[in-house]
Length: 470
Ligand code: 5AD
Ligand code: SF4
Image (cartoon, rainbow, N blue to C red; front, side):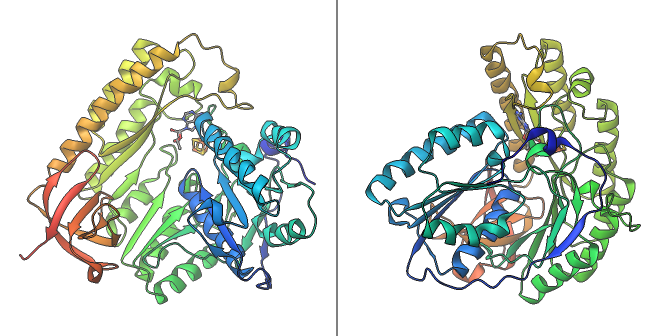
């Protein structure tokens, strides 16, 4: 048993990061048994679930789409807002019910939410039917924990608070044969005052450049068309290694390998360098798309959020990216209702949205996360006011995404086709280089190809198109 502790999670004492190569032999001892995996949250979790899939499938488990058919359930959880937590505990109710009929069912909960001491206490005291609890730092222990759980039925909680390890040789059973995620940096040291991530994902740990490049080359050999470099803040890449390279260097080296499409998320506006902009502008296979979270339009609120930039600095960076990267699309994240956000502060958020006219924005109501500085701040703003602000913001944001989509109507754009559309079997879907979703009339033969598409219609969140005959 290993329990998490927030003070240890927040510790940023400099110790040398250790690289550990995984060398695991996993035997298919559960052949014929079924697993059900559900993922909540961000791309990082989606990618972690590909690692979880590797362990489950190497053990012999086979995927099922229906919870009721499973011998093992794994929920990979998110802690970013309260509603993410509510969803997990809601779903656990269903699992508990199922276990009454299937006492051998193994229930596993993984991911960010499990890094929080309060949730662990709740699970330990009130959710005894959960067999395995595993944190974000030790997914590689999952095969052993599953074997133990199959042999004896006591709850096992294995969560480490922080980590100074970077695992290499991690195996993934990827969801897609076209587009792949690649971790380049784990953790976050920024400590934005509202955010739980530095506690749940630990200190910043970069993978060595040669390891990342080798993974990219392997994916290219396997025929992957697109890769997305992942980090809570990719701009911090390399700072902890002291090897004389940074994110711009890595991005350029990755671009040279020649995968058709390269993306990266997420970038903090604070250390987005000129060199990064130049590299993005220089290489055709680095997609002209930047996700640049602003969070608020008010300098006062940004200071209280510990975001380390002012609105003037953000605007300058925004303009530089727009000016240097041809036809770039920029999206953002915005929080409304941060403690004691005034009408004036909120108006400034609308002002910056009017200035940037984002291609898209993810908007949230502030959700206090226990253990963070903002959760301890006094807050007199009512939920009713926060909800009204969110509505007003969404109306504005949607107006600009619709406008940016409408500008593409009649134009021919390149789309990487991902798959058949779930809603309509006569259509496929894919993304433009600027990350806009396009539904295209067409069939299987287009999947995995980059095609020229004429845009016929625009909505706020997607485009319609047809294969261009031009
Ligand atoms: N409340 C609301 N939104 C949050 N985010 C992070 N923490 C919180 C919180 N406590 C948002 C930020 C971040 C995105 C991933 O989630 O906008 O960029
Ligand atoms: Fe959270 Fe800020 Fe780190 Fe992003 S940069 S993960 S918002 S603390």
